[in-house]
Image (cartoon, rainbow over all chains, first blue to last red):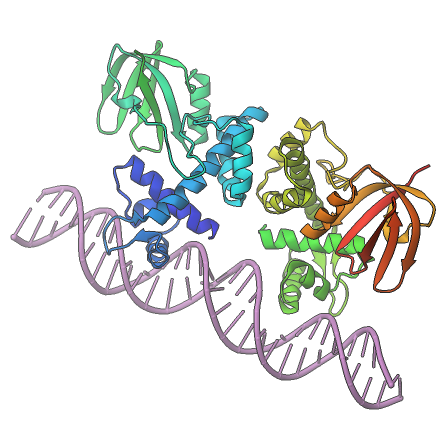
Length: 219
Length: 219
DNA sequence: ATTAATTTTTAAGTAAGCTTAAAAATTTTT
DNA sequence: AAAAATTTTTAAGCTTACTTAAAAATTAAT
Protein backbone atom coordinates (compact mmCIF):
# COMPACT_ATOMS: atom_id res chain seq x y z
CA UNK A 1 0.00 0.00 0.00
CA UNK A 2 1.24 3.45 -0.93
CA UNK A 3 2.26 6.38 1.24
CA UNK A 4 -0.78 8.31 -0.02
CA UNK A 5 -3.11 5.54 1.12
CA UNK A 6 -1.44 5.16 4.50
CA UNK A 7 -1.70 8.88 5.11
CA UNK A 8 -5.32 8.89 4.01
CA UNK A 9 -6.49 6.22 6.45
CA UNK A 10 -4.37 7.78 9.17
CA UNK A 11 -6.04 11.15 8.59
CA UNK A 12 -9.49 9.59 8.80
CA UNK A 13 -8.56 7.83 12.02
CA UNK A 14 -7.15 10.96 13.62
CA UNK A 15 -10.01 13.18 12.47
CA UNK A 16 -12.52 10.63 13.67
CA UNK A 17 -11.00 10.61 17.14
CA UNK A 18 -10.68 14.36 17.33
CA UNK A 19 -13.65 15.99 15.69
CA UNK A 20 -16.28 13.51 16.71
CA UNK A 21 -16.40 11.76 13.38
CA UNK A 22 -16.36 14.70 11.05
CA UNK A 23 -14.56 12.67 8.46
CA UNK A 24 -16.12 14.01 5.30
CA UNK A 25 -13.74 14.23 2.35
CA UNK A 26 -13.28 17.98 2.83
CA UNK A 27 -11.92 17.51 6.34
CA UNK A 28 -9.48 14.84 5.23
CA UNK A 29 -8.48 16.97 2.25
CA UNK A 30 -7.65 19.88 4.55
CA UNK A 31 -5.66 17.64 6.88
CA UNK A 32 -3.61 16.27 4.00
CA UNK A 33 -3.30 19.48 2.00
CA UNK A 34 -4.98 18.08 -1.10
CA UNK A 35 -8.11 19.14 -3.00
CA UNK A 36 -11.58 17.96 -2.04
CA UNK A 37 -11.86 16.29 -5.41
CA UNK A 38 -8.73 14.24 -4.75
CA UNK A 39 -10.09 13.17 -1.38
CA UNK A 40 -13.40 12.01 -2.89
CA UNK A 41 -11.53 10.07 -5.57
CA UNK A 42 -9.30 8.41 -3.04
CA UNK A 43 -12.24 7.56 -0.79
CA UNK A 44 -13.97 5.75 -3.65
CA UNK A 45 -10.81 3.88 -4.46
CA UNK A 46 -10.19 2.80 -0.87
CA UNK A 47 -13.77 1.59 -0.59
CA UNK A 48 -13.02 -0.95 -3.33
CA UNK A 49 -10.04 -2.12 -1.27
CA UNK A 50 -12.27 -2.62 1.77
CA UNK A 51 -10.38 0.00 3.77
CA UNK A 52 -13.40 2.21 4.33
CA UNK A 53 -17.13 2.52 3.71
CA UNK A 54 -18.12 5.18 1.27
CA UNK A 55 -21.57 6.64 0.78
CA UNK A 56 -22.10 9.82 -1.15
CA UNK A 57 -22.10 12.94 1.01
CA UNK A 58 -21.59 10.88 4.17
CA UNK A 59 -18.61 10.89 6.55
CA UNK A 60 -15.96 8.30 5.67
CA UNK A 61 -15.82 5.33 7.98
CA UNK A 62 -12.82 3.06 8.28
CA UNK A 63 -13.46 -0.66 8.11
CA UNK A 64 -11.68 -2.96 10.53
CA UNK A 65 -8.99 -3.43 7.91
CA UNK A 66 -8.63 0.33 7.47
CA UNK A 67 -8.46 0.92 11.20
CA UNK A 68 -5.77 -1.71 11.49
CA UNK A 69 -3.73 -0.03 8.80
CA UNK A 70 -4.09 3.37 10.47
CA UNK A 71 -3.02 1.98 13.83
CA UNK A 72 -0.05 0.23 12.26
CA UNK A 73 1.18 3.50 10.76
CA UNK A 74 0.50 5.37 13.99
CA UNK A 75 2.42 2.73 15.94
CA UNK A 76 5.44 3.20 13.70
CA UNK A 77 5.18 6.97 13.91
CA UNK A 78 5.11 7.00 17.68
CA UNK A 79 7.85 4.43 18.06
CA UNK A 80 10.11 6.54 15.85
CA UNK A 81 9.28 9.60 17.92
CA UNK A 82 10.11 7.74 21.11
CA UNK A 83 13.39 6.45 19.68
CA UNK A 84 14.57 9.74 18.19
CA UNK A 85 13.58 11.61 21.33
CA UNK A 86 15.55 9.25 23.50
CA UNK A 87 18.66 9.17 21.36
CA UNK A 88 19.05 12.64 19.90
CA UNK A 89 18.79 16.19 21.10
CA UNK A 90 15.91 17.17 18.85
CA UNK A 91 12.79 19.23 19.41
CA UNK A 92 9.39 17.57 19.55
CA UNK A 93 8.51 19.26 16.30
CA UNK A 94 11.61 18.04 14.46
CA UNK A 95 11.03 14.54 15.77
CA UNK A 96 7.47 14.63 14.53
CA UNK A 97 8.54 15.75 11.09
CA UNK A 98 11.08 12.96 10.69
CA UNK A 99 8.66 10.34 12.03
CA UNK A 100 6.06 11.53 9.52
CA UNK A 101 8.33 10.21 6.74
CA UNK A 102 9.96 7.23 8.43
CA UNK A 103 6.62 5.73 9.48
CA UNK A 104 5.91 4.67 5.89
CA UNK A 105 9.23 2.95 5.33
CA UNK A 106 9.39 0.77 8.37
CA UNK A 107 8.77 -2.98 8.39
CA UNK A 108 6.83 -4.55 11.23
CA UNK A 109 10.02 -6.38 12.02
CA UNK A 110 11.95 -3.15 12.56
CA UNK A 111 9.07 -1.56 14.46
CA UNK A 112 9.10 -4.48 16.88
CA UNK A 113 12.87 -4.14 17.27
CA UNK A 114 12.51 -0.47 18.14
CA UNK A 115 9.70 -1.20 20.58
CA UNK A 116 11.69 -3.94 22.27
CA UNK A 117 14.75 -1.70 22.50
CA UNK A 118 12.69 0.97 24.24
CA UNK A 119 11.10 -1.52 26.64
CA UNK A 120 7.77 -1.60 24.80
CA UNK A 121 6.72 1.91 25.86
CA UNK A 122 3.01 2.71 26.12
CA UNK A 123 3.34 6.42 25.32
CA UNK A 124 5.38 8.57 22.96
CA UNK A 125 7.07 11.86 23.93
CA UNK A 126 3.85 13.79 23.26
CA UNK A 127 1.97 11.54 25.65
CA UNK A 128 0.14 9.81 22.82
CA UNK A 129 -0.48 6.10 23.33
CA UNK A 130 1.55 3.67 21.22
CA UNK A 131 -0.53 0.80 19.80
CA UNK A 132 1.00 -2.63 20.39
CA UNK A 133 2.11 -5.01 17.62
CA UNK A 134 -1.49 -6.19 17.20
CA UNK A 135 -2.69 -2.63 16.71
CA UNK A 136 -4.37 -2.40 20.11
CA UNK A 137 -4.26 0.58 22.42
CA UNK A 138 -4.42 -1.00 25.85
CA UNK A 139 -4.16 2.16 27.94
CA UNK A 140 -7.43 3.91 28.58
CA UNK A 141 -7.47 7.64 28.13
CA UNK A 142 -9.06 9.71 30.89
CA UNK A 143 -7.60 13.00 29.73
CA UNK A 144 -9.57 16.10 28.75
CA UNK A 145 -8.64 19.06 26.60
CA UNK A 146 -7.06 21.93 28.53
CA UNK A 147 -9.68 24.27 27.12
CA UNK A 148 -12.26 22.27 29.07
CA UNK A 149 -10.29 22.33 32.33
CA UNK A 150 -11.84 23.90 35.42
CA UNK A 151 -10.62 26.93 37.30
CA UNK A 152 -8.66 26.35 40.45
CA UNK A 153 -7.82 22.74 39.75
CA UNK A 154 -4.41 21.20 39.21
CA UNK A 155 -3.71 19.03 36.18
CA UNK A 156 -0.94 16.92 34.72
CA UNK A 157 -0.18 17.30 31.04
CA UNK A 158 -0.85 14.02 29.30
CA UNK A 159 -0.54 14.92 25.60
CA UNK A 160 0.65 17.66 23.29
CA UNK A 161 -0.97 17.21 19.91
CA UNK A 162 -0.05 19.32 16.92
CA UNK A 163 1.52 19.48 13.49
CA UNK A 164 2.64 23.04 14.13
CA UNK A 165 6.19 24.03 15.00
CA UNK A 166 5.11 27.29 16.66
CA UNK A 167 2.97 25.31 19.03
CA UNK A 168 5.84 23.16 20.24
CA UNK A 169 8.16 26.14 20.52
CA UNK A 170 5.49 27.86 22.59
CA UNK A 171 5.13 24.81 24.82
CA UNK A 172 8.86 24.45 25.33
CA UNK A 173 9.09 28.12 26.26
CA UNK A 174 6.29 27.85 28.80
CA UNK A 175 7.28 24.61 30.45
CA UNK A 176 4.36 22.78 28.89
CA UNK A 177 5.72 19.28 28.65
CA UNK A 178 4.42 15.74 29.02
CA UNK A 179 4.16 14.94 32.73
CA UNK A 180 4.43 18.51 34.00
CA UNK A 181 1.98 19.94 36.50
CA UNK A 182 -0.34 22.78 35.74
CA UNK A 183 -2.58 25.03 37.86
CA UNK A 184 -5.51 26.59 36.06
CA UNK A 185 -6.19 29.83 37.87
CA UNK A 186 -8.46 31.72 35.53
CA UNK A 187 -10.13 31.02 32.29
CA UNK A 188 -12.32 32.55 29.66
CA UNK A 189 -13.76 30.75 26.66
CA UNK A 190 -15.75 31.81 23.64
CA UNK A 191 -16.30 30.08 20.32
CA UNK A 192 -13.04 31.19 18.78
CA UNK A 193 -10.53 30.83 21.57
CA UNK A 194 -9.81 29.97 25.14
CA UNK A 195 -7.76 32.19 27.39
CA UNK A 196 -6.19 30.43 30.33
CA UNK A 197 -3.99 31.59 33.18
CA UNK A 198 -1.76 28.74 34.26
CA UNK A 199 1.21 28.85 36.59
CA UNK A 200 0.89 32.64 36.46
CA UNK A 201 1.23 32.68 32.68
CA UNK A 202 -1.62 33.68 30.41
CA UNK A 203 -1.91 31.50 27.36
CA UNK A 204 -4.27 31.61 24.47
CA UNK A 205 -5.55 28.44 22.90
CA UNK A 206 -7.24 28.70 19.55
CA UNK A 207 -10.16 26.44 18.90
CA UNK A 208 -9.37 25.27 15.39
CA UNK A 209 -8.37 21.93 16.87
CA UNK A 210 -5.05 21.77 15.09
CA UNK A 211 -3.13 22.07 18.35
CA UNK A 212 -4.41 20.62 21.59
CA UNK A 213 -3.08 20.19 25.10
CA UNK A 214 -4.62 17.28 26.96
CA UNK A 215 -4.51 17.04 30.75
CA UNK A 216 -5.49 14.69 33.55
CA UNK A 217 -6.78 15.85 36.90
CA UNK A 218 -4.15 15.62 39.60
CA UNK A 219 -5.74 13.71 42.45
CA UNK B 1 13.87 14.99 -5.77
CA UNK B 2 12.00 11.71 -5.91
CA UNK B 3 12.95 8.27 -4.66
CA UNK B 4 13.19 7.07 -8.29
CA UNK B 5 15.70 9.81 -9.10
CA UNK B 6 17.76 9.19 -5.98
CA UNK B 7 17.93 5.49 -6.76
CA UNK B 8 18.85 6.21 -10.36
CA UNK B 9 21.87 8.39 -9.59
CA UNK B 10 22.88 6.00 -6.85
CA UNK B 11 22.81 3.09 -9.31
CA UNK B 12 24.97 5.01 -11.78
CA UNK B 13 27.44 5.86 -9.05
CA UNK B 14 27.68 2.29 -7.81
CA UNK B 15 27.88 0.79 -11.29
CA UNK B 16 30.51 3.30 -12.27
CA UNK B 17 32.69 2.35 -9.32
CA UNK B 18 32.20 -1.35 -9.82
CA UNK B 19 32.11 -2.19 -13.49
CA UNK B 20 34.65 0.31 -14.69
CA UNK B 21 32.13 2.77 -15.97
CA UNK B 22 29.72 0.48 -17.73
CA UNK B 23 26.88 2.79 -16.96
CA UNK B 24 24.82 2.43 -20.09
CA UNK B 25 21.06 2.55 -19.56
CA UNK B 26 20.74 -1.23 -19.78
CA UNK B 27 23.09 -1.75 -16.85
CA UNK B 28 21.25 0.74 -14.70
CA UNK B 29 17.93 -0.76 -15.74
CA UNK B 30 19.07 -4.19 -14.63
CA UNK B 31 20.34 -2.83 -11.31
CA UNK B 32 17.01 -1.14 -10.63
CA UNK B 33 14.74 -3.80 -12.07
CA UNK B 34 13.15 -1.52 -14.65
CA UNK B 35 13.01 -1.69 -18.45
CA UNK B 36 15.78 -0.32 -20.65
CA UNK B 37 13.29 2.11 -22.11
CA UNK B 38 12.49 3.51 -18.68
CA UNK B 39 16.18 3.96 -17.99
CA UNK B 40 16.74 5.86 -21.23
CA UNK B 41 13.75 8.08 -20.47
CA UNK B 42 14.97 8.81 -16.98
CA UNK B 43 18.49 9.52 -18.23
CA UNK B 44 17.19 12.15 -20.64
CA UNK B 45 15.12 13.71 -17.92
CA UNK B 46 17.97 13.86 -15.43
CA UNK B 47 20.21 15.44 -18.06
CA UNK B 48 17.84 18.42 -18.15
CA UNK B 49 18.21 18.66 -14.38
CA UNK B 50 22.00 18.75 -14.70
CA UNK B 51 22.39 15.53 -12.73
CA UNK B 52 24.11 13.68 -15.54
CA UNK B 53 25.47 14.02 -19.06
CA UNK B 54 23.56 12.13 -21.68
CA UNK B 55 24.75 11.31 -25.18
CA UNK B 56 22.97 8.73 -27.27
CA UNK B 57 24.41 5.23 -26.98
CA UNK B 58 27.09 6.43 -24.55
CA UNK B 59 27.56 5.48 -20.89
CA UNK B 60 25.80 7.82 -18.48
CA UNK B 61 28.06 10.16 -16.57
CA UNK B 62 27.06 11.88 -13.37
CA UNK B 63 27.73 15.59 -13.13
CA UNK B 64 29.17 17.02 -9.95
CA UNK B 65 25.62 17.72 -8.81
CA UNK B 66 24.58 14.15 -9.58
CA UNK B 67 27.59 12.70 -7.80
CA UNK B 68 26.80 14.82 -4.77
CA UNK B 69 23.26 13.55 -4.70
CA UNK B 70 24.42 9.93 -4.99
CA UNK B 71 26.90 10.38 -2.16
CA UNK B 72 24.29 12.03 0.01
CA UNK B 73 21.96 9.05 -0.40
CA UNK B 74 24.81 6.60 0.13
CA UNK B 75 25.82 8.47 3.28
CA UNK B 76 22.32 8.11 4.70
CA UNK B 77 22.13 4.47 3.72
CA UNK B 78 25.38 3.59 5.43
CA UNK B 79 24.64 5.64 8.54
CA UNK B 80 21.33 3.81 8.93
CA UNK B 81 23.13 0.50 8.52
CA UNK B 82 25.67 1.46 11.16
CA UNK B 83 22.95 2.60 13.56
CA UNK B 84 20.65 -0.39 13.12
CA UNK B 85 23.59 -2.78 13.33
CA UNK B 86 24.74 -1.23 16.57
CA UNK B 87 21.35 -1.08 18.22
CA UNK B 88 19.47 -4.14 17.10
CA UNK B 89 20.15 -7.80 16.63
CA UNK B 90 19.57 -7.87 12.91
CA UNK B 91 21.37 -9.59 10.03
CA UNK B 92 23.42 -7.57 7.57
CA UNK B 93 20.89 -8.36 4.91
CA UNK B 94 17.90 -7.17 6.95
CA UNK B 95 19.76 -4.03 7.87
CA UNK B 96 20.51 -3.37 4.22
CA UNK B 97 16.89 -3.81 3.26
CA UNK B 98 15.62 -1.35 5.87
CA UNK B 99 18.33 1.18 5.02
CA UNK B 100 17.36 0.95 1.35
CA UNK B 101 14.02 2.54 2.26
CA UNK B 102 15.01 4.83 5.13
CA UNK B 103 17.80 6.47 3.11
CA UNK B 104 15.25 8.39 1.05
CA UNK B 105 13.29 9.75 4.00
CA UNK B 106 16.10 11.16 6.07
CA UNK B 107 16.91 14.85 6.40
CA UNK B 108 20.52 15.98 6.45
CA UNK B 109 19.81 17.15 9.96
CA UNK B 110 18.88 13.66 11.13
CA UNK B 111 21.76 12.08 9.22
CA UNK B 112 24.16 14.36 11.05
CA UNK B 113 22.56 13.44 14.38
CA UNK B 114 23.00 9.75 13.64
CA UNK B 115 26.58 10.27 12.56
CA UNK B 116 27.36 12.27 15.69
CA UNK B 117 25.73 9.66 17.90
CA UNK B 118 27.92 6.95 16.35
CA UNK B 119 31.08 9.03 16.70
CA UNK B 120 31.22 9.95 13.02
CA UNK B 121 32.19 6.47 11.84
CA UNK B 122 34.18 6.12 8.62
CA UNK B 123 32.85 2.67 7.68
CA UNK B 124 29.55 0.86 7.82
CA UNK B 125 29.07 -2.77 8.97
CA UNK B 126 29.88 -4.03 5.45
CA UNK B 127 33.17 -2.15 5.51
CA UNK B 128 31.92 0.39 3.00
CA UNK B 129 33.16 3.94 3.57
CA UNK B 130 30.63 6.49 4.84
CA UNK B 131 30.84 9.86 3.05
CA UNK B 132 31.02 12.83 5.41
CA UNK B 133 28.42 15.61 5.57
CA UNK B 134 30.04 17.31 2.57
CA UNK B 135 29.78 14.12 0.54
CA UNK B 136 33.49 13.38 0.65
CA UNK B 137 35.02 9.96 1.17
CA UNK B 138 38.24 10.73 3.01
CA UNK B 139 39.46 7.18 3.48
CA UNK B 140 41.43 5.77 0.58
CA UNK B 141 40.56 2.30 -0.55
CA UNK B 142 43.45 -0.11 -1.12
CA UNK B 143 41.29 -3.23 -1.16
CA UNK B 144 41.01 -5.71 -4.00
CA UNK B 145 38.33 -8.23 -4.89
CA UNK B 146 38.82 -11.63 -3.30
CA UNK B 147 38.63 -13.23 -6.73
CA UNK B 148 41.84 -11.39 -7.57
CA UNK B 149 43.63 -12.43 -4.38
CA UNK B 150 46.85 -14.44 -4.63
CA UNK B 151 47.44 -17.97 -3.40
CA UNK B 152 49.22 -18.40 -0.12
CA UNK B 153 48.67 -14.86 1.09
CA UNK B 154 46.72 -13.70 4.11
CA UNK B 155 44.06 -11.02 3.78
CA UNK B 156 41.69 -9.03 5.95
CA UNK B 157 38.10 -8.68 4.81
CA UNK B 158 37.38 -5.02 4.18
CA UNK B 159 33.94 -5.09 2.53
CA UNK B 160 31.02 -7.36 1.84
CA UNK B 161 29.01 -5.97 -1.03
CA UNK B 162 25.70 -7.45 -2.12
CA UNK B 163 21.97 -7.04 -2.42
CA UNK B 164 21.49 -10.75 -1.95
CA UNK B 165 20.34 -12.38 1.26
CA UNK B 166 21.86 -15.75 0.35
CA UNK B 167 25.23 -14.09 0.10
CA UNK B 168 25.10 -12.66 3.60
CA UNK B 169 23.80 -15.92 5.03
CA UNK B 170 26.68 -17.69 3.31
CA UNK B 171 29.15 -15.19 4.73
CA UNK B 172 27.77 -15.46 8.25
CA UNK B 173 27.96 -19.25 8.05
CA UNK B 174 31.58 -19.19 6.90
CA UNK B 175 32.93 -16.56 9.26
CA UNK B 176 33.28 -14.06 6.45
CA UNK B 177 32.86 -10.80 8.31
CA UNK B 178 34.29 -7.30 8.18
CA UNK B 179 37.71 -7.33 9.87
CA UNK B 180 38.18 -11.11 9.85
CA UNK B 181 41.37 -12.72 8.60
CA UNK B 182 41.50 -14.98 5.61
CA UNK B 183 44.14 -17.33 4.16
CA UNK B 184 43.87 -18.04 0.46
CA UNK B 185 45.32 -21.49 -0.01
CA UNK B 186 44.22 -22.48 -3.49
CA UNK B 187 42.39 -20.85 -6.27
CA UNK B 188 41.03 -21.44 -9.71
CA UNK B 189 39.42 -18.84 -11.95
CA UNK B 190 37.68 -18.94 -15.29
CA UNK B 191 35.34 -16.48 -16.93
CA UNK B 192 32.24 -17.60 -15.09
CA UNK B 193 33.42 -18.22 -11.56
CA UNK B 194 36.24 -18.27 -9.10
CA UNK B 195 36.83 -21.19 -6.77
CA UNK B 196 38.83 -20.37 -3.67
CA UNK B 197 39.98 -22.42 -0.72
CA UNK B 198 40.16 -20.22 2.35
CA UNK B 199 40.67 -21.24 5.95
CA UNK B 200 40.24 -24.83 4.73
CA UNK B 201 36.82 -24.06 3.26
CA UNK B 202 36.17 -24.13 -0.44
CA UNK B 203 33.99 -21.27 -1.61
CA UNK B 204 32.69 -20.42 -5.02
CA UNK B 205 32.41 -16.83 -6.13
CA UNK B 206 30.34 -16.12 -9.20
CA UNK B 207 31.56 -13.42 -11.51
CA UNK B 208 28.31 -11.61 -12.21
CA UNK B 209 29.52 -8.86 -9.90
CA UNK B 210 26.34 -8.73 -7.83
CA UNK B 211 28.11 -10.00 -4.70
CA UNK B 212 31.73 -9.17 -3.96
CA UNK B 213 34.11 -9.71 -1.08
CA UNK B 214 36.86 -7.13 -0.88
CA UNK B 215 40.06 -7.76 1.03
CA UNK B 216 43.25 -6.00 2.04
CA UNK B 217 46.62 -7.69 2.23
CA UNK B 218 47.65 -8.42 5.78
CA UNK B 219 51.17 -7.04 6.20
C1' DA C 1 33.10 -7.59 -43.81
C1' DT C 2 28.66 -9.28 -43.53
C1' DT C 3 25.43 -11.40 -40.72
C1' DA C 4 23.45 -12.18 -36.35
C1' DA C 5 22.58 -10.85 -31.76
C1' DT C 6 22.10 -7.47 -28.52
C1' DT C 7 21.28 -2.95 -26.84
C1' DT C 8 19.44 1.54 -27.16
C1' DT C 9 16.07 4.47 -28.56
C1' DT C 10 11.54 5.95 -29.97
C1' DA C 11 6.65 5.69 -29.72
C1' DA C 12 2.44 4.74 -27.68
C1' DG C 13 0.07 3.53 -23.63
C1' DT C 14 -1.03 2.79 -18.44
C1' DA C 15 -1.84 3.62 -13.31
C1' DA C 16 -1.38 6.57 -9.34
C1' DG C 17 -2.20 10.73 -7.41
C1' DC C 18 -2.90 14.80 -7.92
C1' DT C 19 -5.07 19.55 -10.25
C1' DT C 20 -8.93 23.01 -11.78
C1' DA C 21 -13.63 24.01 -13.24
C1' DA C 22 -18.27 23.27 -13.21
C1' DA C 23 -22.49 20.66 -11.78
C1' DA C 24 -25.11 18.66 -7.98
C1' DA C 25 -26.25 18.19 -3.31
C1' DT C 26 -26.13 19.71 1.27
C1' DT C 27 -25.94 23.03 4.91
C1' DT C 28 -26.45 27.60 6.73
C1' DT C 29 -28.44 31.98 6.92
C1' DT C 30 -32.03 35.08 6.73
C1' DA D 1 -39.11 27.99 3.46
C1' DA D 2 -36.20 30.41 0.10
C1' DA D 3 -31.98 32.19 -0.88
C1' DA D 4 -27.14 32.12 -0.21
C1' DA D 5 -23.07 29.83 0.89
C1' DT D 6 -20.52 25.87 1.24
C1' DT D 7 -19.28 21.23 0.29
C1' DT D 8 -19.21 17.19 -2.45
C1' DT D 9 -19.05 15.13 -6.66
C1' DT D 10 -18.10 14.65 -11.53
C1' DA D 11 -15.35 15.47 -15.48
C1' DA D 12 -11.35 16.49 -17.93
C1' DG D 13 -6.51 17.01 -17.75
C1' DC D 14 -1.61 16.83 -15.98
C1' DT D 15 2.94 14.70 -14.27
C1' DT D 16 5.71 10.92 -12.77
C1' DA D 17 7.39 6.62 -13.49
C1' DC D 18 6.75 3.02 -15.37
C1' DT D 19 5.25 -0.70 -19.43
C1' DT D 20 5.47 -3.22 -24.24
C1' DA D 21 6.52 -3.22 -29.13
C1' DA D 22 9.02 -1.92 -32.90
C1' DA D 23 12.74 0.81 -35.19
C1' DA D 24 17.58 2.22 -35.14
C1' DA D 25 22.17 1.71 -33.77
C1' DT D 26 25.80 -0.73 -31.82
C1' DT D 27 28.43 -4.85 -30.72
C1' DA D 28 29.72 -9.63 -31.39
C1' DA D 29 30.31 -13.69 -34.23
C1' DT D 30 31.37 -16.08 -38.19
